[in-house]
Image 1 (cartoon, protein in one colour):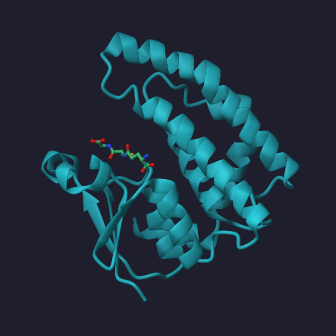
Image 2: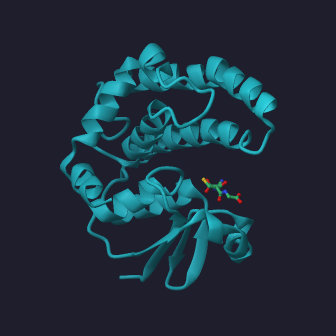
Image 3: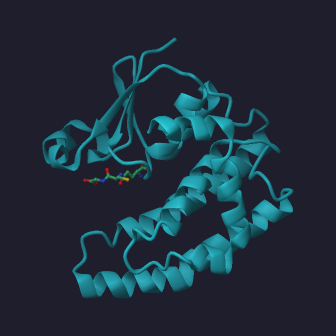
Length: 204
Ligand SMILES: N[C@@H](CCC(=O)N[C@@H](CS)C(=O)NCC(=O)O)C(=O)O
C-alpha cells in the first residue's frame, strides 16, 4: 500500500474534506496534514499550483481536488467501476467544483463588490446548479447521484450543501438550498446519518 499524506486547511469543509472523509470511511491509513491559515503563506510555494488539497503518494505531490477524489474513491470503494456510473459521479463532482470556484473567486473582493457578485451568483448560477443537481438526484432514484449507492459524488454534494446551509458564506442566504432544492437538504441529512460519516464527525 502506498504511503499517503493529505494536506488541506484545518476546517471541516472545503475542497479537501471529501478526500479526508473518504479515506477515513475506507479505513485507509494516511497522514492528515491540517494547515492553519497563518502557516499558509509560507507553505503555498511548496504546493504544486500553489493551492490545496494536495495528496502525496509515496512522496510525489499530486493536486486537483476531483482527481484526488477519484483516486481516494477507488481506494475506499466509493467510486463506481462501471464507466457510465463513473461519468454520473464525475459530472456531479465537477458541477460542484465549478460553482465553488465562482464563490472562491469573490473571496478577496472588497465588501461591496463581494456582496454584489455573491448575490448575483446565488440568484443565477447557484440556483441553476442546485436545481439541476436536484433533478439529477430525483431522476436517479432520489437517494444517490451514481451507482445506486454512496459514492464520492454524494460526499461532495453533502459537504457543499452543508457548507451553504451553515450560513458561513456572507451574502449567500442559508435558506437558499431549502428554497430551491429541498431534495438536496434531505440528501444532506441522510448522508450525515451514514455510519461512516457519523463516526468521522464524532472524532472531528
Ligand atoms: N482546482 C483546484 C483549486 C484549489 C484551490 O483553489 N484551493 C483553495 C482552497 S479550497 C486554496 O488552496 N486557496 C489558497 C490559495 O489559493 O492561496 C482544486 O480543485 O483542487
